[in-house]
Amino acid sequence: MPFLLFQVPYLGNGMAIGLNAVIHVIISHGVAIGFTAMIVVAEYLGVRKGWPGWEEQAARMLKPAAIIITGVGAVTGVGIWFTTSALNARGIGSMLRVFFWPWFIEWLVFTLEVAAILVYYFKWDAWAGERRKYRISFGAAYVALACVSAFLITGILGFMLTSDGWPWSRSFVQAFFNPSFPAQLLLRLGLSFTLGSLFALAFVSFARLEPGHRRQALRVYGRIMLAAGVLSALFGVWYFAVVPSRFKTHAVFSVLTSHFSQRPHLFWWANGAAFLLLAGAVVAALAGARRAARVLVIPAVIAAAALTAEYERVREFIRGPYILPGYMYSNQVLLTEEAYFRDKGLLDNSPWFGLAGRAGDKTLEAVYLFKQNCSSCHTIGGLNDIVDRVRGRSLDGVYVIIGRTHEMVPFMAPFSGTDEERHALASFIYDMATGKTPVRTFYLPFPPGRDGKR
Image (cartoon, rainbow, N blue to C red; front, side, top):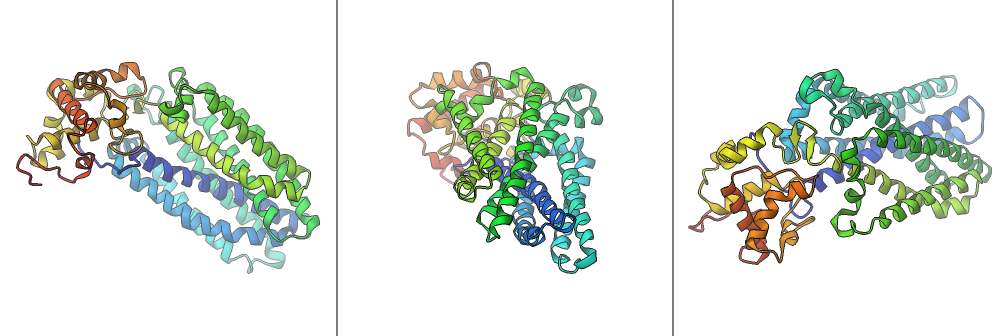
């Protein structure tokens, strides 16, 4: 393979990428789009409608928004590039070749977003008096800019699930405007305003505000959250309808994993409880009930964050065994390469492994085979531990599982390598499961050879 392979200890590669991405999505959607839009709404009501207290509230909401967007949001955005480039280099490289211009334009838009939110914050007091109308226009322009960023990214994310005919046509237009693009874009925008209005409810529930203004603010944001939530649900149904049928069957398992997969009712109970919390927060807001809102809004924020993480998890998981359906498996092996590696061997056709100069080191060979074939989803000694999966099985059983799992578990990529390499990986995993090889051996930069040297 043309890229170095890394393994994140304990968390695993997929979880390391996913955790950073979920935090970024909550900020980029819920704060950069949704919460900032609620600031613009507050300023509009204060300046254009003349409602007392709203303009001051908008100013107080802007400071935490600016800090979160330019601090955590910007860092996690860069973190997505860092983690994917290190842990999924071939996949992100292939995506860049398809979507260079949308990504380049999105980078420019993101830079403008950061500059705009800083201008919006630092020029707030300067745009006073008759110039307050400029603040409203500038705030609305910032929200529109953030929506443009969502537009550009959604085409790319949709492609990763519904690549349509691109593997054969290689058409950029077909790739970007893929079947799930419109539904996912509207769903993401709906979720943005749902999260943003919920965050605004949290702010007005706990901020020091005049009681009459607080009740008014709760009702305004409650109405927005209700409308955005209903639209998000409708867009979610549309989105799930265009997801290929073979991927839909993985949805519940992607959340419950193998530990709870035999208890699907947990999925529905947990999601039902989350939606009830959100509905409760909306009802309390519409009633202008501060105490009830205070009790419900924080659990509702946690539930909303969990639902966002669940959506991202499902979207990423169900496209297995692919990174790019019809083109690349989740282990970064092209569909057209798998048969070649099975015949000619993975190790002999992996440049970086050859450059390491450790051919013949059975431990290092097995580590490389695991990293290439399994590490996108599994760890050794951490989350989704492959050793736990095979513990108690015979060596022959492990060998059979490695070669046949993709037939039994449709979201797993097939093993790439010769029969000899399959035996080598099976022996390595079996030895760790039986305690013959310490688990820590896997994380050594260069596992010891027969002479004990590294």
